[in-house]
Amino acid sequence: MSVFINDLVEESLNHRAVHHPYLRALSDGDLPDTQWALADFADHYYGYSLHFPRYLTTVISKLEIPAHRGSLLENLTEESGVYGEEEYAELAAVGVEREWIEGVPHPQLFRRFREATGITSPHSPDNEAIELVCWRESFLGTLTYGSAAEALGALGLGTENIVSTIYVPFVKALSRTDLNPRDTVFFPLHTAVDDHHQEALEEISLHFAATPTGKGDLRRGMIKALSLRSGFWDWMYERALTCAGASRMELVS
Image 1 (cartoon, rainbow, N blue to C red):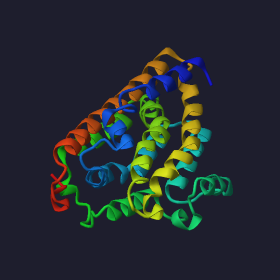
Image 2 (image 1 turned 45 degrees about the horizontal axis):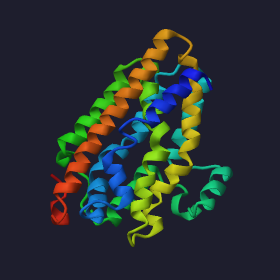
Image 3 (image 1 turned 90 degrees about the horizontal axis):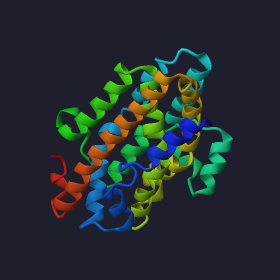
Image 4 (image 1 turned 45 degrees about the vertical axis):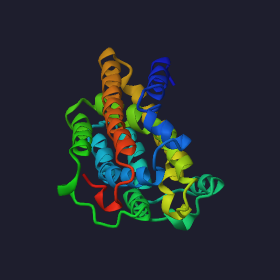
């Protein structure tokens, strides 16, 4: 891995989106009502997570080298619930049972978590909060209209690179609830398997880091994605601090 890519990886992992007060509060149990906050997160984050295959296919469509497209197509295969034996062994080591995830697309795993928190109403795009819509559409706009390097920086360095870190606070918060591990498997799955996604995206990034323009676009996409996520965490944190105690039926704003 080049020094430039390593520096970007370090910069992303030190960003506020990764060390946000919201994540620290979840990890430490320092919220007025952690269970309410988890349900609120599940309800709103689903509108982002649901579209992850679309994010991947958008970036794949921008890549010209067949090996690069093939690498991300493998990630897309995992997103649909298909894993190799090596991945199953890694997941078993962290307590994830094969039958929980085999053949289940990741958006469905998150929906399972959403329902387990008590959000039983069907997701409706018409009822999505504007804060969620702004995050998702701005992120998708970067992937769609930015250069291939910018899109890769957003999805790779600015997203997949941090996933295994930012989901750890959720794993810790969930460990203090009585939710069934099968229903929360989305999180340990991503703290383990997404390391492979991260490595694949970093390898492709090396190709674009060969020129000054490519380097600039990689970082631009990364910072855009991180800043957008940080803004979403700001909103989630404000809700967790001020809306606790509200009825579960009033979660959707």
